[in-house]
Image (cartoon, rainbow, N blue to C red; front, side, top):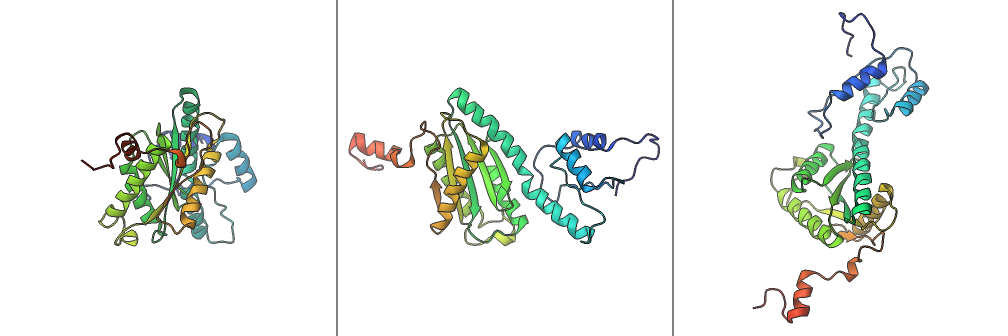
Length: 267
C-alpha cells in the first residue's frame, strides 16, 4: 500500500490524489503486464460514500474494494480487477462512437462497426489480448479498436461504407487466420488456424442513433454468424435508409460482368 510522503505535512484530499494520478497516466492501451494497480486505504470511507463520490465526480472507472469483506481481500481484488479490465474499453469506445456518429450526421460520412469474436480456443485472457494486439496492428490509424467483455473485439471503421467495411473486415479475418498459425498469438490460441466470427453494422447519418443502438445492431449480426456455425461474417440490416442493404450491393466483379459481358479475369 502506498504511504504518504513524510515530508509533506499537509494531507491531500482523496479526490486530489485521484486526479493527480489520472493526470500523470497515459491514455494509450497497455498490456496487463505493463499496467500498474494503485492501492489506497481510505479510513472512514464506506461503500455508500464511495458510490456517491464516484457518481458525483465521474470515478466509475476506479475500483473500490471493502477491507472488511468476508471474502479474502486478494481474491476480491482479483475479481474486481478482472471486471475493471473487461469494461475499461467501454468509455473510450462510447466516446469515439459518439464523435463519429455526430460526424456522420453533419458531414454525410458513412460509419461502420464490426464485432469480432473467436469461435473457439481463446478463453484465456492473455490470448485475447494477443488477438487484440493483432487487430490493432491491422487496422487503419484513424480507426478504433477495443476489447469488450473479455471475449469480443469492437472495430470502428471511420468513413467506410458498408461494402468497403465488409471487404476490410473480411481481409482482417483472413490475416488473423494466417498470422495465428505463427508466433503472434500466445500458445493458447495458436494452431492450424484461428477461426473468428464477425458481425457488421453500418450507419449513413440519416436518422438519430446512439452508440448503444449501433452496438446492438452489430451484436445481432454477430449472434447470427455464430448461430450459423461460426467462421462467418454477417452484415446487419442498415439502421437508416442512407445505406443500401447487403442484398442490393453490386460489387466490382458484378459491374465488370454487367458492362462487358465477361467475368473477372477473362481476357
